[in-house]
Image (cartoon, rainbow, N blue to C red; front, side):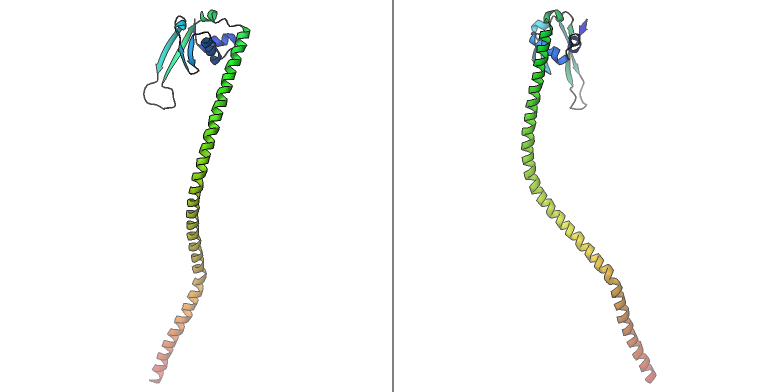
Length: 183
C-alpha cells in the first residue's frame, strides 16, 4: 500500500510535519519543511508526482507542487519507538517555536521601521491636510455668515426701499398734483 507522510504518521500518532522530520532524520529526505527533496536512499520507497496548475489564476496559489507517496515497507526502516516519537515531537515543536520567534522579531522590526516612516510622513501630510481643511472650513463659514446676514437684512432692505421710493414717488406725484392744481 502507498501512503502519504501524513497517513504514515497517523499510524504512530504523528502529524505529517513530524513524519517528514522523521523521514529527514532517517536520511530519506533532505532540505527544509516546504522544500524537501528525496535522497538516493528513499528512491526504493517513494513515488513522486509533480503537478502544475496551469497558467493564469491568482499569484497566491502554488502553481507547482510535488506529492510523495511512500511504500509501507519504509516503516520498518524508520525504527519508531515511543522515545524516538517523543523526541521527534519535541524537535518539531522547538523548530516551530524558533520559526515563530524569528517571524515575530522580523515583524516587530518591520513594524517599528514602518511606523517611524509613517509618523514622519503623516506629520508632514497632516500639516498640509490641516491647512487645506482650515481654508475650506473658513470658506464655508464665510459663505454661511454671508448668507445669514443677507437673510436677516432682506426684510429691512425691502422696508427701506418701500419707504424711500414711496416717499420719492409721493413727492413727485404730490408736486405734480400741486403744480397741476395751481396751473
